[in-house]
Image (cartoon, rainbow, N blue to C red; front, side, top):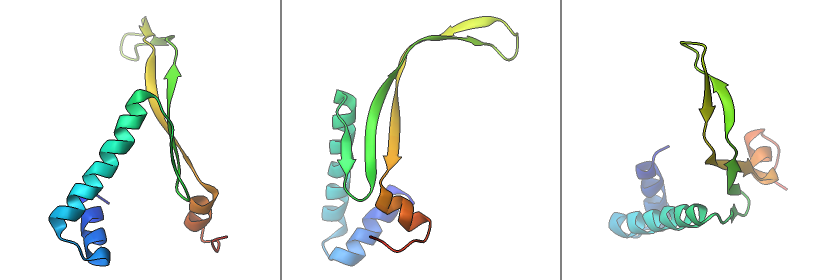
Length: 95
């Protein structure tokens, strides 16, 4: 599913203009992205939690040459699905 598909689905259900729906969807994603960039957690009730984790630097190996390299520290995005989403995916009735 793409962002355009989300806009189309919301447009069909809500009835506002596509331009307005597109602006709202875009603003929701910008809000989520902005909070994650700041390092805040984003919790969407009934869907899941997004958070940014710091990974420390570590030693790795170049698979082509076999030489050791240092992989620098970085921030990674993590997502943990809510129990409601997990149940919906597995076909269990919603609680």
